[in-house]
Length: 233
Ligand code: URA
Image (tube, rainbow, N blue to C red; front, side):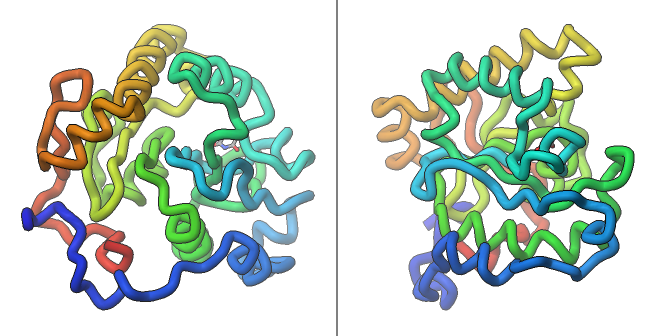
């Protein structure tokens, strides 16, 4: 076994995974942080509970707060276009955010909010158990890969943390303001398509550090750091 492969003897490997319904029930009408006072709707997540791919964004914006669904605004339209690039539609994937409630004025999530909210995200990941986690932007990427490195340097490669392959990409909202990122996003979704194709998937099952369509090895950005996913490996 290599350091990055799942440890079948890890005690948590045997722990039963929660259902998404159980995670939703546990959140309830969450009042654990002040964002609950300013939100309209808690945005839990949407999609196939058995999806092979899970997308993790930052936090609900205005439209998401009103509708109770992630990525329904302009960034969501671009995400739908990109999903098509990978041969996917929304119903085939699962989409969630680092925070379940909108930060006022769409400000960045704060560390205390991330700490309080992400245990639910971890349980969502454990419930869905996707093969691939696509992290949208810095907040999701830092949380999942347990790194402080910027998205610009991390995107375009596939990382492994425990069971999961992780593909960090630019946040689609960033591409709305900087159109030069649109082509890069399309290239990263082409990479995702390759990851999901049966041939690539079989190759990455067999060989740690194998090529992933773009000729890049799976790796960990911080090999010496414990990942946040130690307990779900
Ligand atoms: N941006 C996000 O990160 N998440 C959403 O749900 C919408 C916009």
